[in-house]
Length: 333
Image (cartoon, rainbow, N blue to C red):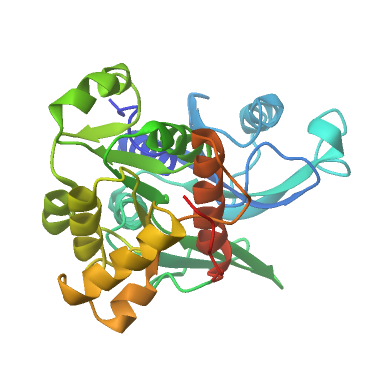
C-alpha cells in the first residue's frame, strides 16, 4: 500500500515499482506546458496494463484520453512524446483556458531492469541522490547520471534528446509552532512542499493535534536535535518562527551545518541585528555561515499580520528555490 503522507512523486514511483514487478507499465512525465495547465513540468503519472492509474497530468480529461489510447493499442514504443490541448493529439481533449502540454510516455516491461531503473528514480525523489535522466526518442532511457542540484531546469528537450532532472520534493522544516508557522505550513503544503514541524513544547502540541491525520509531519522534538540527527537534502528550507531566542538561535546554529538552500528566522530588524551578533559571539558562527541566514526572514512586502508574514516567508523561499536569487531583506518582523 502506498501511504498518502509521502510526497506525490514518491507515491507514483512506489506504485510503479509495485505494478512493474508483474506487468508492463506506462510512466508519464509532463515535459512542457503552455497557457493554463493544472500540472507543472516534472509531474508524474503511472498506468498499468489493466488501465489503473496513479498520479495525474491534468484535472482528469487528459488521463481519460490517455487510457482510451492505451486500450486502442497505442504507446508501445520505449519512449514517445504526446501532446494534449490545442493542436494536440485529440481535438476534443481541452485543457483549461486553451492550455497545452507535452507528455513523455515511457513503456516499461516488467523485470529486473525496470525495477532497478525505478528504484534509482525513487532514491532521487527521496533526496538520497539527484539524478539526470536522458533518452533519445523513441529509445529507452540510456543515461541516468548522479548530479548535484545546481540550477538545472526540471526538463529540457532538444533535437529528440529529452533530459529530465529528478530530485526530492522541496521540504520545509518549521522550527516551533506559532501563528505565523500555522499559515506557513498551509501555504507550503499547497505549494507542493513536504512539511515537517518540530515542536517539543507541550503547551503547543495540543494546537497541532488537528494535523495528526494530515500529510504534515509533526515531530515532538527540539528542532536543533532533529536537524542534528536527521539528514537534510539541498531542497530543504528551514525557518524558525517562534520569537523564542533559545529555540530559534539553537535551530539556526544547527541549520548552518546542513545543505539547506534557505535558512530564515523571524524577528524585527533590530532583534535580527542583535541575533546575528549573538550567533557570532556566543554561537561561534562564521561570517560565511551568517550570510546564509535570512534575518529578518521573508520578502519586504510591508507585512504585518501572521498570514501576510507567512506569505512573505514562502514567497522568499519559492524565489530562492526557483531562481537561487538573493534579496535585500529589511522589514520589521
